[in-house]
Image (cartoon, rainbow, N blue to C red; front, top):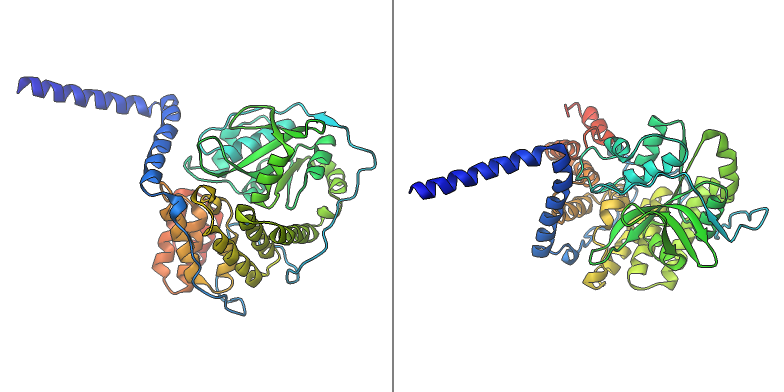
Length: 420
């Protein structure tokens, strides 16, 4: 018995020591994400998220609701006429031919910490313009909780507006010519892309572009996951960039705004830009199959949301989810709704509240832990629209646990007269 008691006491002492050491900040930073990844891998093995398929069950109601709450966790969609097919706009050509190769210097490369791709890319882009912070500073604003799954471009815009003297512009429907012209002019853009690292499932990723080489047909990016000065072949960029509607972000000082707008040409106008991206998505729908077709339909919906054609957007997302269900399991980008929330807008503003709830619940249930403030927010909105006030309040408060200070949720609770 004494031997057994000694063993138990020794085990308890080791456990207490390990717990103490784990709380040391430097140790916790190194180990916590590994434990999180291990837990996720175990859960995803037991419950493969790629097997879960969201199937819309409602038909959009017309007209779109006007009496329901309208606050949203991203900037209001751009006002404009109903989305229809438009001719593709071509940016104005450069007055002089572009160099065959360009390499910008001045970016302070950072390897991302856990779930920190967005904050790391933004801090690197800011460093090019002399900003002195790093990803810890951007992350404190963009994702206070380390386990937060994603940072949206609009959140990056908010950070730049509130914390720097620079400006950040977001555009969609980009192409390699636009990227090359921006880099050649001294404006390294951030691209939002899909990403498939070895032996890992599809995920979203940002890439800061600091160069290109036409002869070798590749961009040079400051990749936060692999290495600085990573070469990305043009065809790989085009394939994975499509997954995020060819979104690109341009950071610049206010005194250079005229130069940036001139480089953008017709794409400087936001509605023209969105209609250009819509036309591109519609063209890709006619030319694509498999996963590329899924993203083409999804992009069509996203652009229609931005044009406030919520009925057309809902139909587009319905088609995207139908294509998704036909994909092979290893082709399904099951994390996509962590990063792109357009279906919530489309289904909510066409009165499809049960589809909003079911989609949000599907996403949350298929995470290793239900940490997604946007899904909690939209589920709350739909619950309130259906008369479940208490359920809405619970989800709004849960979203604030995931993302403390999340503005849209705070605004809804204030409107409802409820303490966060």
